[in-house]
View 1 (cartoon, rainbow, N blue to C red):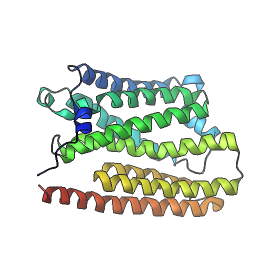
View 2 (cartoon, helix red, strand yellow):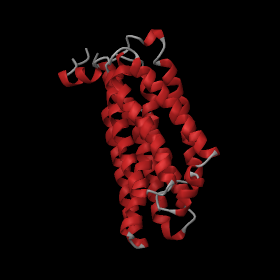
View 3 (cartoon, rainbow, N blue to C red):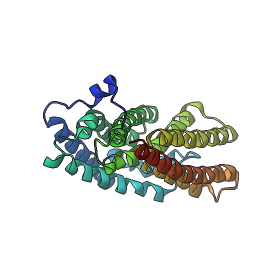
View 4 (cartoon, rainbow, N blue to C red):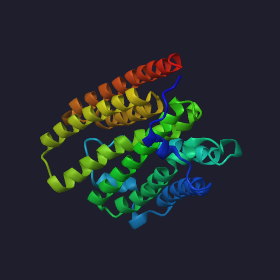
Length: 270
């Protein structure tokens, strides 16, 4: 038998007023996707995110191909937006539990595009931290409900993908903000980057151990692999490149093991 819900968590998962917040989620997701599309066709401040990133290089910026993960994230979010509005999900507690922070995450993601395009680096970091915090709440609530069999196993996958990439993006954004304000020399910046790679991997494994779902560590591993690809050909960042590759492999392999073991243990305990 699964453990009873704690009172605090019951409050978190209580249905919101009517279906208004579910429609707000759908609108926020569609709006987020739309503003990302518009920002590529008609860039804010006349420059895309890629162009701004090129002006502010960091040791942790992943290779360009890694950003293609947004296609999968947006597709999964769009499918979720439709799924949570279906009549069959009316009594499912998950959409109501995650609605408010999920709206915030999508709104802030759209806001980040504008702030970053205007090269407001420190404000963009603060917005990114807001996205991360919102998604952490979404993912935590979703995974607890899935593990209690209150929602299908696949219903938390979009949030694992989203949070996984934002976890990597936050580290990059923090590094960028520190670089623009602190101006460390190359050796210090490299050492900081290596430490942050280790912290990212450690946090990813800790989150996976607690919530036992593969989408999150797989996406973090993808981002770390992108850092390796971006740094592997530069002699001065060779150590960072190999560190990122090792971290990607460890997160992927241990993430798979922790997810499998945790889900098996959860099934056995019922």
